[in-house]
Amino acid sequence: MEGAAGARAGSLRGSLRAGSTSAIWRTAGAQAFSRSSRDEDDEEALRWAALEKLPTFDRLQKGLMLGSEGPPTEVDIESLGFEERKALLERLVNVADEDNEKFLMKLKNRLDRVGIDLPSIEVRYENLKVEAVAYEGSRALPSFMNFFTNFIEDIASSLHMRKSKRRCITILNDVSGIVKPCRMTLLLGPPGSGKTSLLLALAGKLDEGLRAGGRVTYNRHELKDIVPQRSSAYISQHDLHIGEMTVCETLHFSAACQGVGSRYEMLVELTRREKAANIKPDHDIDLYMKAAATEGQEENVFTDYVLKILGLEVCADTMVGDQMIRGISGGQRRRVTTGEMLGTAVISLLQPAPETYNLFDDIILLSDGYAIYHGPREEILHFFESMGFRCPEIKGVADFLQEVTSKKDQQQYWVRRDEPYRFVKAKEFAEAYRSFHVWGKMLGELSVPFDKTKGHPAALSRERYGISKGQLLKACTDREYLLMRRNSFAYIFKFFQLLAMALTSMTLFLRTEMMKDNETDGGIFLGALVFGVIMVMFNGFAEVSMTTGVLQAKGPLILPSLGLCYSLMDPQSAYYIC
Image (cartoon, rainbow, N blue to C red; front, side, top):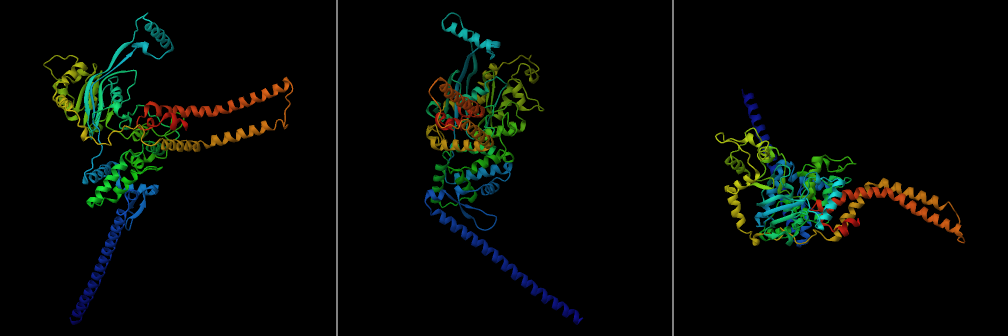
């Protein structure tokens, strides 16, 4: 018993010693980790304080980069590499579908803390009417016979010898509404309803051959007073890209042509206010905003962000492709076009899925040139129910809206069994909408002019170019050098081919001086000249085919199609020089 008691006492003393020893190690470890954490926080605070003491320009070129372990390190914004940008975006937007909204809220909260508002644009179109004078039926087909007949008829009509058979076709008939900022608007309508013309009118890109009436304003500014291409873009149904460039290179070139806009000035004001209020921003958010606002970078973190949120990372290094070059898919090419434009306020979709339809805030429904509805998405079914048409539960709302104005499909949605059905035309729908409460609210908003004092100075631009012509020339030169490197085999092969032919021609006659006394000698000189001209002509055939292919890809980019990026360049200087 005494031995057992002694053993228990010994084990108790041992356990106490062991417990006290482990407690000492735990305390020492906790103190060590706490001391290490405090040291890192102190070092981070010292680095941030040193960064805050720099002049404004130098402060915007520096940032604190978080590492996998240890305190943040100071980095130069212009020297951020691919791995650093990738690590930054993975911390901010690891999964685009889940983290993008959180990231945008962090950006918004940083601006809200110091009272900075983002630039926003309210687009109003009032009594907009678009008409076209054109031939109808088979006379409108692009055939040689129609061209010749129309040409003769136009001459006879100008001489008052025969009346022209052209007819005035109404594309948009007295439509009005407001495209509000911070709201996504879906434009619906069957083919030929005027969707494209409305989008072109809002973007200020209507064809000059059309007759346009009414007015379109951006924050109460007429289109003639601003450069709408700097604030809006019309994304065509046809994706026009240079097929030999990769997705990443295409977006980098687009970003280089557009510049950083007002982001740099906004960042200067933001840092000034934060310093005055003694506010310390999140290091990753601060580093991202500084990198996105820095000009002159060959690769920008903002482009990497666009690639990530559009799901183009998997094909970032794949050529876009064209009819002759295998590239990305059609859906990916459409996302590349959207990434170039960076604008999604009004979107026209033919048959969107219910999940896509529910993402929008406002709906514009067109049919036969009439605006049947423009207002909140939640009220559109109530409007059609007031007209006697109801969407079945098993039917998608977007499909119902496409078919309810069709003469072929309208009857199946008629629910007033006590009244005989009759076809309701688009004009009648438009007149009924004018008495609906949504239009009354819209009319009240249209009657109150936009307060220009509330508009952000950076929202609209009166300058045609986003960057200087020298920077545009540099961007185009870099792109052409990239394309030449990509086709280096053709250029190298052609160089050696011309060199071999030149050496052969030079060694045909090793005489240093040719006779020039008679007609025979003149014929030899003439033959040499003809030989030289023929060689230049045939050797240029390969270059002509390459140039033609490039112009087919580039020409539409600069002239009418991609309004936000490429048409901002001076066609006579920067673009075609390269």
